[in-house]
Image (cartoon, rainbow, N blue to C red; front, side, top):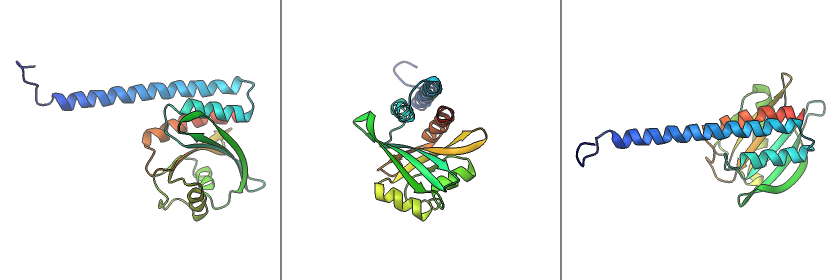
Length: 189
């Protein structure tokens, strides 16, 4: 400081430093969640218990209204969707549903084939196949992230978070969900 004047670049530098500190904090918290989820593989929890533990661990990092785990059954050409409907007021709670759906022509099939995460900001995203677009619209979801669950070199399913609001997720959410999907796949396996 020069007397009572703030140097001209100070506000910008302060903003950049605060943004860097926030990213570091989020990255650290993300690693803590990955470690927490990794520990689930050694527990005696059943699969619904693991899914709810994942939802509780992710809730402080990603603002989602729905978490789902879709397991692929290539022999039947189906997805077994374990849906956890989460209340924004109670992210650790929620109801569990077990639904079987055809996998052909779905965004889940695309994620499995491409082996990469997919974020869609609204239902007009051209990567969303019509059948998936209609399912998301029917459930009221306007944005989401799907991350592949990879085990023993193959995609066994995907981890999905959804929101009723368009553009609810950012690149950081994709990164966190992708990192968490690895130990979730191990715990399922």
